[in-house]
Length: 109
Image (cartoon, rainbow, N blue to C red; front, top):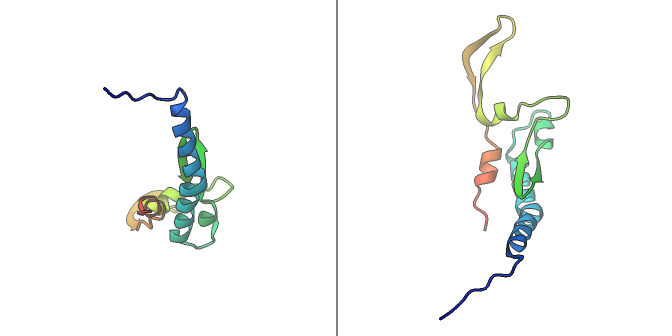
């Protein structure tokens, strides 16, 4: 009969290896690809793309820059046009220009 014996710190070893993969390889590569795919007018959106860790979870995010600008989702997903003079959201749409999802879903090997 065969037995498998697990080290007491096996989970810590797995999490440490994942953290190293996320911070050393995967996070920077996804960030670089997202920056490459990002549409550029001023460069603020591209420059706001960053990767970080939240516990053992990799986060790749974009805001659009400092000063409370948070328009990355509008660019990624598209949006309807707001007309400030009338206060109406019109039927016109701005097409999506995805940059985060293509970077995330890229096959890496």
